[in-house]
Length: 393
Image (tube, rainbow, N blue to C red; front, top):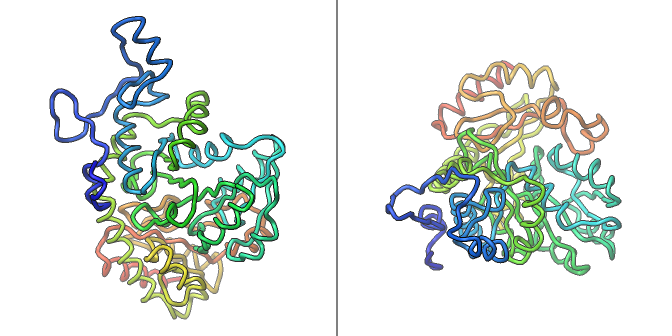
């Protein structure tokens, strides 16, 4: 791959491996194992396989390798490891590197499953976790400890869309040699500058914008080669959370249109936020790209776009939110995001329903909050649909 290629070109051509047939579209290698010419060659490959040699699909596969190489090129990472889901990527990035007695410092505003890993799973293994208000640099500074090994956060939080200063948090973390791990789903690989700002490990649920069409679960961990091959790869080999070749092919082909899709979705989200801001039935419209957002200046500096997701909060609570959802005609009610179809979600009763009321209140997940992931429909149709549903709420 030419290192001077722009991201959109890398998304189309990066990481390609052609067979002897010279196929134009990347091949799906639907095989779990590989054949060796001799017993000696099998022994040599198990000792040290090169980048074009494979042992078992749980360890690697040509189609999976193409996806890993291509997205690493887009993100500007040295290496990547594909996983079975976004949460497989989250849990692996933490569990592969942490041991009893280690400390994790995390932003408190996270997806519910991420909170489960941090609150329920890590403490079982003697790993302590501290949560802070991610937007407060003072809290990060006060909570960092000598035994902090990992700092975890979402670049844009789900579903209240807080934005954290990655560069400053990275500086704080690196003072004690802690690795900064970010769930970068809402920023997307298109707008991401995370690694350039000092982040060590970037995670995506490729289920979201990378697939973008609601077809398959997947995840990816991106970092330097040393971390991926000495920390992540051995863990994934032996715990079995790797991506399937067919899923990798879906994700690989979707990368070709990722830039076009995400820019179109973000443009529609910006228009939607402008129209919704000031609607009387809404006590909040939260969109990182709107000037009213608390971290607007940081958003423009760090991401350069408001992204594809916005949240609205109805003054009349859950009843109004449900009436809104039930009145939608174009948008669909679901709990995914980053899809070609516009999706509306009520976090308090779905994605974050397991949290206590106090925790929801702390995170700003009110009964009236609705998260809207903007799709690829015509923006005028979307705006008309959402406005008519707001009126019925």
